[in-house]
Image (cartoon, rainbow over all chains, first blue to last red; front, side, top):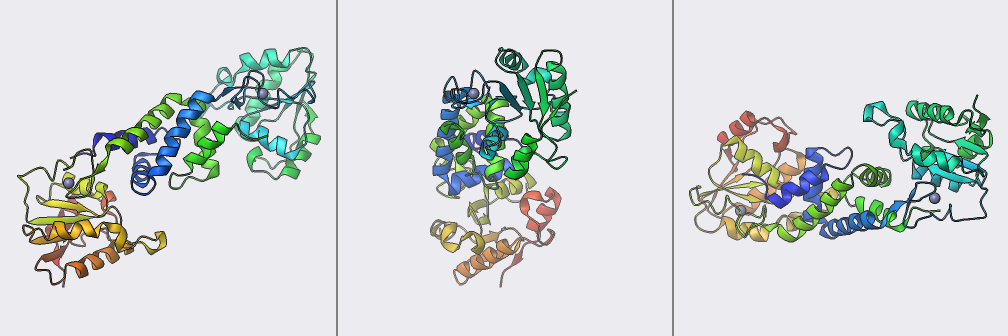
Length: 199
Length: 199
Ligand SMILES: [Zn+2]
Ligand SMILES: [Zn+2]
């Protein structure tokens, strides 16, 4: 006696979600099928739509439905400052803090040996020509102040050394070990204002 | 600056999953879109398939792709014993323990005032005629030994009182507060063998 195939397949499919093991997947499947079929249908539609409509901005690499995201398409922004963040959520925190008028590059990750994520996985082939376009004069590294974020920051500063760009790091106004996404906006803004040169 | 609509909709849709809040939903969405697009597509397909193909067995109420599930369709099983469980996972545990040769009824839940789930939500309109079909002589209550499972067991025993059926409860060989799904099979089998009459 097994679950019917369609149910087994749904449970297996839910396990692709990070942090979801067999028991949680089963609980999720039962919940969707018993108590929220509309939600399940909405989720299926949203997955389809996201897969077909979302791409990466050609300039900053964040998720976008257009070739250029609204920020990169905004000619009023400073073209000489490029802020590098790990994830789109970090970019949005900086935008909400209204502390930076330049443009961004989103790595879509951070160096993480445990997850098998090295420099190759961080879109550096896209970052390098972007930063060396001749208009950017300062690269602001705004990766998290976690161990992984710091390693990533170090790798980035090495990458840009001797390329004729000022390379800065947002100030450690943030708590050590903190993540951009969870900090209050005032502290985050302060950290941007106090960014320092990287030797 | 917001996430593009397709991404916001995916994050919102993921929040229908039990235990998934805004931050987890965002992490799941990023994971699917960056690292597992195949998994995301598989999940969308599995949701569609489950929603269109899964129904409830007409006799025992468990999830099934056919009108009668394989157990209810199996004429070799004892027709005089009906075991009532909370969820399909519980039924499968009992089957794996190979301790019961009768048929099942799956409530698809348990009484839970906190979740606003009362007797009306437990498919009793389907259970009662099933148990009173004239062939069933014993109803074996195998809800969990949690507070909610015990309340449900009590409600069921009241329901079947004075209906001319033997009503039994699987033995508390299980740890108090334990759930069927997590117990070892030997203990579970013992609890079935030692089921006792309900006064
Ligand atoms: Zn962009
Ligand atoms: Zn059945």
